[in-house]
Image 1 (cartoon, one colour):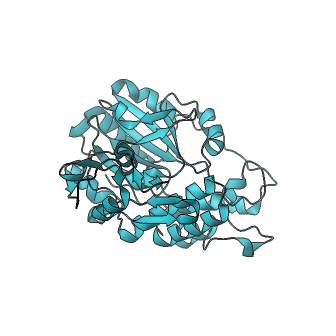
Image 2: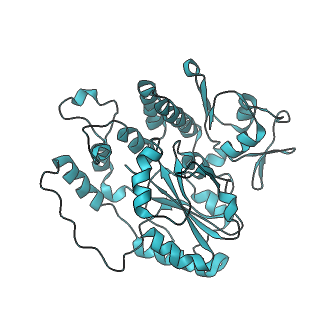
Image 3: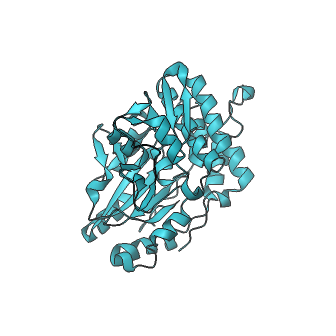
Length: 113
Length: 244
């Protein structure tokens, strides 16, 4: 997840990382990682990242940070619950994966190179 | 090909969502998407969030998600659907540079289990959770890509690189792409994306060159290139074999 500030709205943090911030901690499906303090809103990214074990890389000269994914159990997925992917289409309109609940979905990755 | 398959399966409660992984965004993807005329959601992923969120590190890949939003098959190689009537064999233009001829020869050696994958897909669409190809939540997690702390750090460097590239800081982007390649050596998409941004020559094939300019080979900023890397691992090992 890319950041221009180390404090981001909770909804942005949840959409960007796939982790829901709940009273019991940061959760994906039924997997919850306890937090050292309640996450708050806006989220203190550096602190929560440390709790969940997400690497944070800075490019200070550009005022930019990137938050890497967690690696719970040394796997890409902590849970089989699909994160609520949000991406734009060609017209720039944002699409939300959860809008397809009730259908089987094949998510297909390709590249023009 | 995928559009036709989607139209066939859609009445059974199936939808296809395609995601173009490209830091160049619309500029890179538009021509391909418009040619495919998709009626399904067709999305653009400039920062490869699919790598972070789903463990996608190669293309073409798929993830299957059921009606309740549960992943039933994590990222795996997704061969194109078999064509009912194969098109005429395409002849290569006589003036095609030798590098492209060699790249296409390697690409032709990439192993695909089209039959196995697509009969499994139809079985799942038909039988849902009862299909033996729909994996349990535990199995989905176990089969998802291995990712340790070093790889997670590599993902962060990659995303930083994509943003720096978009902001016009190409040289700084290269530094972070290199770090991503070092930390996530098994990601083909992290490499191919970076290589594709080093344009050698012009024209529609320029982004497929993905290697040093023969006239200035020392200017190539990366440790590997498409042809060199695929020969190193063997094209037959490009994708992991499909497992039922």
